[in-house]
Length: 400
Image (cartoon, rainbow, N blue to C red; front, side, top):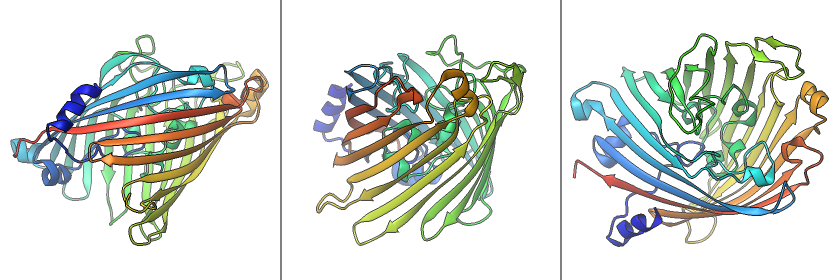
């Protein structure tokens, strides 16, 4: 994958860098106006992320892995392309080689947000978004919950999965919620009552894909599996900041952690915020924090906390480079500790630097220290070191 991308670069192709609008490198979604302004009514992007990452000390055992992530994203402003007023089409294909670094580290947070554990090429998202006026939209289809819910920009720099959707939320469900790498059918309604405000709610199939066939895109609706209901309010915070308050709940019954049967009520709440802390000319400093809860009767972690800072443009002549330090901590529930003998928490500290070497190329060295992987007192603390490379191209622009 690297050689074709480099060949395009040498031929003179240098489109804008892949967007970083979500909490993962593969969360590429554009508003119709953004598509039209930069690319015309149609957009086709390829982004290849390669990561050499190793467990240098502690954990389950030492070793290294090569992980990768290929995104193929097609978007269309259907009003411009086909006369469908207010509509946008989004199609997303995803490939991963299936290697795992967490099998060496033994952690629960997942130290790399492109790890899948299953080699597969799959249809990841396929939805249509319909706007009603300027402030209301309805989105339906295969949908990544984390592309809009529980997602802010500042924490998207980090490689650890816990700085995307919080571990309190990502741990839940019979096959996780509808997030990377498996998504489910969903309908999302969003209302923007005022500038910088948004209220969004979604109903999702509670079991994305098929746990027995994890490499396939499977759509299967079942009354027994139930639904996942999510609501979120976004509000402005200070000068240029954002505040999110969300709540989620499954309608199905789940096995209790202590083995005492099944029950309803698997739910949780999260709050997260980001705020510019400094805006000197050519330099930015952003801070972020998140706290979330999950039902301790059903889940390993019943409380989660993360925080960090991101510096942008602080090195002379490197205005697009970013550096950050972040911490994530998942705290085990009392029923889980009773059954397993687990310790109180798993804590991950990450330092990372993203260097934008060209419009189409970025590299990102990073280091993570994992305290009590999987809250298992028998697993030594782990030191993870990695180097990530991102190559991104716009494959065509039909306007030009």
